[in-house]
Amino acid sequence: MDSTNSSEAPLLYVSHVKKYFDITSLFRNVGKVRAVDDVTFKLNSGETLGVVGETGCGKTTLGRTILQLIPATEGNIYFDLDAPLMNKIIELEESAYAAGNGEKTVDSKKDLNSLLEELKPLRSKYSLTQIGRSELKRTRAKMQPVFQDPFSSLDPRLLVKDIIAEPMRYLTNMDEQQIENRLYELIDRIGLSEDHLYRFPHEFSGGQRQRIGIARAISIKPKLLILDEPTSALDVSVQAQILNMLSEIRRDMNIASLFISHHLNVVEIMSDRVAVMYLGKIVELTSTEKIFKNMLHPYTKALLSAIPSHDPRLKKEVILLEGEMPSPASPPTGCHFHTRCREVLINCGWSPQDLSVHVSEMFERTRNPEARDFPPVMKIEIDNPGLYLDLQLGQAVSNKDTVLDLLDRLIKKEQSKPNGIRFRAISKYEFVSDSTIRINLRKFDVPTLKEYSKDHYVSCLIYEKQKQKDSSQILEPIMNETDEQN
Ligand SMILES: Nc1ncnc2c1ncn2[C@@H]1O[C@H](COP(=O)(O)OP(=O)(O)O)[C@@H](O)[C@H]1O
Ligand code: SF4
Ligand SMILES: [Mg+2]
Image (cartoon, rainbow, N blue to C red; front, side):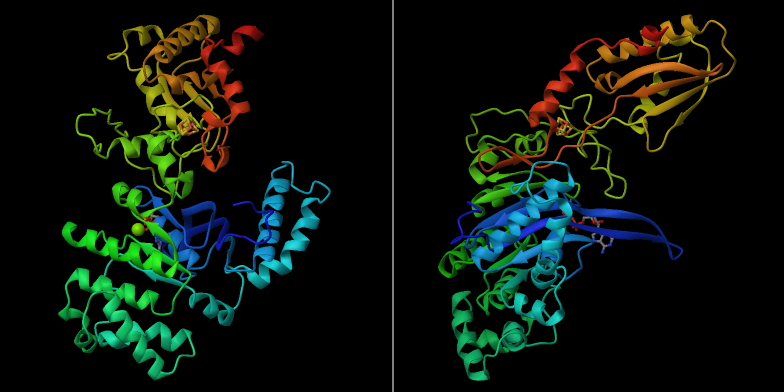
């Protein structure tokens, strides 16, 4: 959507939202789980955005933060504003973000401070992360959730009629007669009968309960549904019925939705656009068709390679993701995906932590006979977080050049191995004392979600053209800069 067209605007604009959870131990704050880490996207009226990614990548937290069931740590969320106002806010937010990063802004005459000054009253009046309870109540009347577990999300003590009527009673001014009329409409809409209104949730199957949850969510004719894995707790046979019902309802009532799921084939059927999440970040965002036919991000490629092809005759390569998803409490440096990426470059975020085990193995004399002539390495110290590792040798060295030559050979051998890329991130090695060699790494870059082609956003250094040019250095054999200096 063209944000300069003032007659149209997105229904929802999520701007650089973060949700960090504190990790506490013995009542002390010992770290943070970065469940949602700088997420930005827009959603149009009536549109469905699928959100996919492995368990733990932050999908549920994103949904709950948009609903304001949990407060955001940072960022702003704008929902259902008049088009000119929404477009003005989007322009200001985008300009302020660009100015904060030293990039060119839409209105280059304004500096960061004046943009923030202009945004301040708009944020406090309209951003869901800043407005008061009563304004939030008005928003809730237009934005409703359907949760994953139909067993825990319905109050077991209430009759179905009271469960469905709850949002109408609390969020609207409808009288009891209007509510009753609507209840009969709704129960018919979800394929149950009137007598079901007078039963308790435990009398229903999982699929029927989810229908009741959907009736409750649509009872107040919301503009947006946040559907968090609405069918993943159900039997496969029931899933299709519920998904069909949801599709019909959304179309008939023109409701936009955020469709959260880790089932890609379901997302493909249900979504107009798809956002792929990895460790709290959106790594790719585009139309469903492009995600499935012309995906760019290496993580998306791996995710999609795992779903069976529609045509069983077509053989496709399954890209296995090595290792577990890292913890969002200590995500990898640089690109969060670099520890598992098949297309990783030398500037994608290699850290001393990533190298230490491999450097240690390089000196294991039983595995690597060429390391026998190298002085014994007693300890590897990591600069944390940082860009070097220190090798503590067992003795002071007098023939430093010979030792550095040997190290050069060992490292070059590692670099030439199929997964030797991490060793190619080494920039130089030098003695910093008679018994300490410092192995320095190159500085890394951090990708951000950028528009690569029209409406196709990706967060990967391969597609950041300038950076790609810089990283062509990796193809050159490394020269120990110590050698050059000597
Ligand atoms: N209330 C919470 N307190 C601490 N950590 C949480 C909380 N809720 C979620 N997390 C953590 O945040 C990360 C994202 O979780 P979640 O949003 O549930 O992911 P998903 O829905 O994609 O499986 C996980 O590491 C999870 O353990
Ligand atoms: S920036 Fe791109 S190439 Fe580099 S690790 Fe991340 S996904 Fe892979
Ligand atoms: Mg979840």
